[in-house]
Image 1 (cartoon, rainbow over the protein chains, first blue to last red):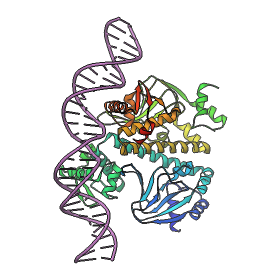
Image 2: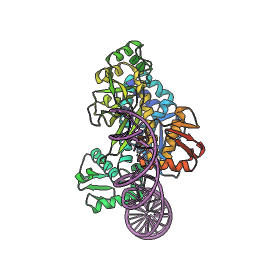
Image 3: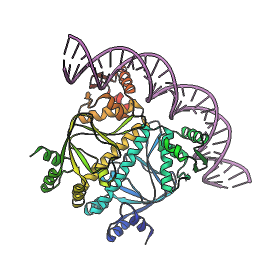
Image 4: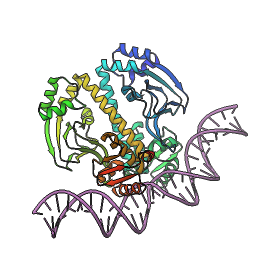
Length: 221
Length: 221
DNA sequence: AGATTTTTTTGACCTAGGTCAATGGCAACT
DNA sequence: AGTTGCCATTGACCTAGGTCAAAAAAATCT
């Protein structure tokens, strides 16, 4: 099977669709390559189609008047983005840029809308995906509003530990500056908190590897 | 048409369903009454069904270890809540309580899941609803992270102005303490900010009525 | 390897806004 | 009208974390 076909067929979004439609999707998808740090679209751009990450990593983010960034999502291979805007025919509500050099599949609006109406199981997949995102957003709001920065970092470390299936150490999947933007803080503050948690013996930082020395304590945050 | 039937038929969620199914829904819905300030469910409760507001107002909120509240949503007549959890068979991810004495319709899980699978147009309604919520959440994250409290208040005043269809004054639809919790701040801080914006001549506060004296300036925030 | 750019860390300083406590207003109830 | 209870306001104080600037460390390029 061709690479792009496999990405489509294995994706959470299109899983379970009939062969014919998967092939159709693969046919209409346009492949786009982006170097690291390139912008894919800006907030307010008309949404004439949506994307799926084939390879690499993409961030969706808002920017304040003062230029501060807040990352809303980070998407990896198999994950679609920009579909919500496409669905409503509204402009994109946030910016998208690559965090690593990436290969993306672009799906034009028309085809997608047609497919969803015709395909109940696709609609159910979309509902599942949106529900999951809603849950993540709710957690992010909770973290931003009810936890201080150390607590948010702890929350992210727990998430990574779960995702990487280990509880002794995790490997950061993004630069610390970007992590700061995801956690809603500044690189300086994040750096200080890493330092403090190290002094307290909760973690040990070795470049991108964070050793979790006392998960119990970390959980408390 | 009976009252509950009208609520169901007019709702964003069930709009467009065939008569027979609307009637079926009205039949299986259980009506529940709650006085002001009562809890409907707690975070972590098993989600055996979901609700729709028939009358009154409901808040969905998280609580920090220290007891601080963050409101995620406020729902009024015709709006469903708790459906996402029901869909996944997961426990409720947040608490729900009434902001005013309310009448709710409760729909048991089984019926709903069956109905969605059988009914493509219902699935599309759900997608539209989830998309809208996702957008609102994104705005809330942006506000919490990238704006200071005056900016968040300005954002809410704009929202109210739009909703109430006027640009000279708006009427607060919730107590100021609850508004503080929605904006992710404390009642004290919110009170001070109302005072400051009044001194600056941006607004004039008369109980629950806020006169918008300089919408241009307010927009800047 | 050396040079250049980007990222991270550290230090010094400052402020938005949180907390605690007291007071004032207002509404509901008797 | 008086009492009770809740909500909003104000004052005093404090701290988490933001900002600016500089140094150090990594990553990237030739």
